[in-house]
Image 1 (tube, rainbow, N blue to C red):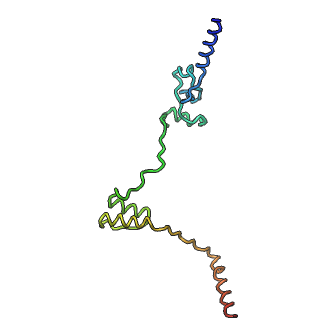
Image 2 (cartoon, rainbow, N blue to C red):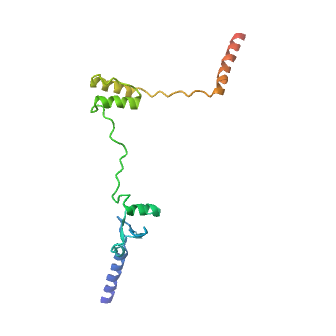
Image 3 (tube, one colour):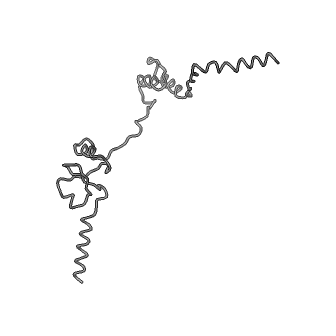
Length: 156
């Protein structure tokens, strides 16, 4: 019976040695960039360090990771910068914003309340699409129906 208990302990220890870390599943070889599973026996070796990059990355990308060109920390992605706040903007910022966004030149010498009101009015205008000019060969095709209508009206 005691022998059976010892075998179970050895089996449990062997399973623990072979268990891969879930948070950082790979280690990278510092010499050649090869990836290995992050298990306790490999993690003890000083040639290996935790790898936080893409496991399917090319060798060049893994070597760049080793060189420190990519951070091992998690990246924060900022989708939108802080939107333009009309109530906190200075007069110069409002004038620049109106020029960039709406193509309108505002007078920077006006009081800030009037600048804010003008910028707000510009933001409420609907966007007007610019009509596309017809190709040069289609100008005669556009005039043909007019001539036909005149003839019909003259005959009737």
